Image (cartoon, rainbow, N blue to C red; front, side):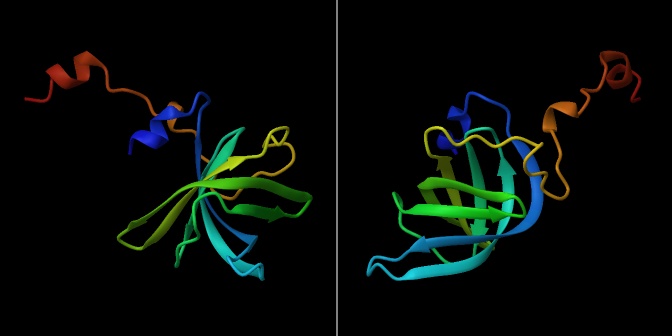
Length: 121
């Protein structure tokens, strides 16, 4: 997706369940548990079983606080809805405040060397 490529800082992949809260179109407080797919300093991607409208304010809770942001996209892919969250101005995620389970930096993947590729016969 083109929208995912626009981030200017690295995204860390993760798999963690997080409580989320938002207000529906009628102003009612809603709560759910979402799968946190990835996170960066300024945003995150959540997976839910249902859609939440773009531009909806949302709160992601963790043991020491909350990360607040706005839904920038909501797309359905095979197993559920993926929501792109942009954190509000002044809200930044750091590993010191919240370290999701199974956190992985894809930049740590090593590229195969040319020698290894040449000797595959």
